[in-house]
Length: 394
Image 1 (cartoon, rainbow, N blue to C red):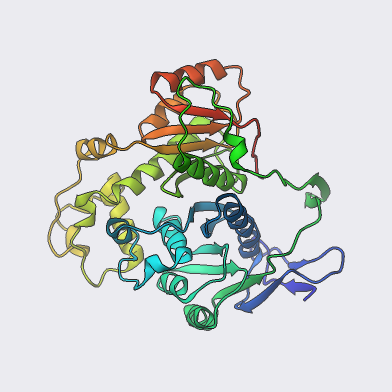
Image 2: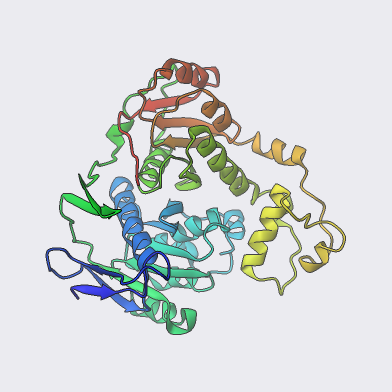
């Protein structure tokens, strides 16, 4: 297939629309089901690069959940505890921990379930039956992977009345070293960002505390690679082999840190005993549960515990999760990693990160206030490394 005609571009008025190879060669992908659109393919090709690089950097199967050309999360295939499986709504998947790839996607989808609604999925390895069973009940636009077992393909083809977008990518495909894009009729050209994010990138600790355990190295690698494919400015919190808070596309670095931190806090609080014990009506759908849990934790527009509201969601009225209870729970958390795609200009980013349990930080360095940022890390006993490499993505 040398080109594929799309229904339209980013919006219905943007026609004609297609994908093709400028050199006239074959596209390095195959559409097995559905008809992916312009944004679908932007998500697919960015997300595939992310999981491929995480696989190379960690040696573990990887998955990501993408929305609007940024990841909501990325994760590697570590087993899930019973508590985490419940929080991710995958406790009913038989044999989950026997499939590292299924564990990776369960973690990625379960991190920020509201943002992942209608996601594009990327898998680093051939999709197996267990992974397909994790995907099946979720609202998703499509998936890209290097292959699918017959059993997995049969399951995925039942989604969206047989129109689920399934793309197979050639894992050996290597793009040209120079890339182009047009903006307002003007062509931009640049070298592809082939910079490899490896453990050696974390070898320059600049704080008094220089301790960086292997688990933190893994989490920082995941966070940095996630940022490489996140719309800038961006920061990423990670722990236990998964990105737990991504702040994308903010003009201010502190706003990135706050946004991602609030997502990380919500992920942590999904495992609070009160949240795990919420008495949901058996008829409540998965998306409604996600919205209610977010409202319960963050006290959003609707008080889901108020009389007249709780009856729509619960079999009995739950006790609210108070701000004091949430703060006490979050104060017990340590060992979280934080990465930034560009330097931190002020120490306030570190102060906010500390409230989400951050112990390890990776950033390029290069600010005129690097000393202030290092001093703030030292005050809290954090380890920070300078990578020397900016990771902007636009």
